[in-house]
Amino acid sequence: MPDALNGMPLAPGWRERLGAVAWPLVTGLLSALLLLLVLLPIAGLLFASSIGKLARGLADPLVGPAVRLTLATTVASLVTIVACGTPLAWAIARRRGAVWRVLETVIELPVVLPPAVAGVALLLAFGRRGLLGPALATFGIGLPFSSAAVVLAQSFVAAPFYVQAAVAAFRRLDGDLMLVARTLGASWPRVFFTVAVPLSWPALAGGAALSWARALGEFGATLMFAGNQVGRTQTLPLAIYTALESDLQTAQSLSIILVAVAFGLLMAIRAGARRGPGR
Image (cartoon, rainbow, N blue to C red; front, side, top):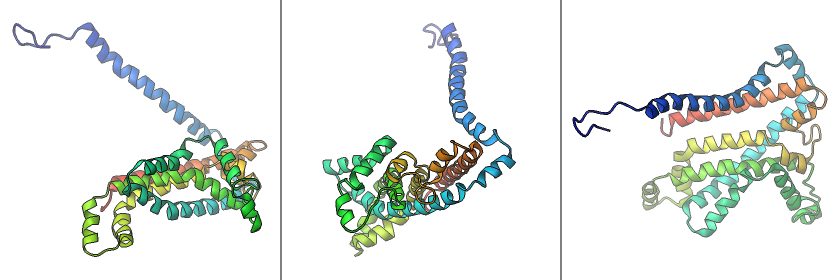
């Protein structure tokens, strides 16, 4: 504070000097602890074995079928999420009211559900004795413990990531642009496809990437609803779980693949966010 007599600032007291020294030390220590918590497991994953051992781990018979099934099911789930989630996000973003707020909350619910709960919920909805199981059985369709069950489990847990991003992007749109398009005679479908989606494309792409990454790492709901059958329902996370029982090198090699893919996706999302729309 300035001195009341001469207007000069008072010399800092010992508390201020202690705070000036302690604050950066405390914040630096806490930050370093969290960084170590994140970096040490990744370092252990990357450097605990030689490149030769990791390459031999990739030669395990589990790897090929798991990689192929993971790519096929995650692409199928991503197409499903984008095709169904984009119009849903558009509807949620444009409407107000308690019903739509509740619907938005329900859509986000899988983000916080425990994987075991998600698996049980899918079984009770699509299982043989579930809500839709008997009706599906009349057409000879059995979803549990099939590749389709893998796609359903991945879509269930990953959809909120895309829908959240799409809703936020559509809400940021300038309403005047859509109003001008409407006054020029554009129908709502045309406004959606030629104005809303192109302007929201960076956010939609980022949400789709996050959704695909979540589907790629899905484990618990898939295990409970689809099982762990090699070549049929065993995705990469399930192959890691299986390999841990017999061959740690294979589990480590597959884990590194998932880490590399996740890191690449995050870097791509950050690069797209820096460029921004229209650049």
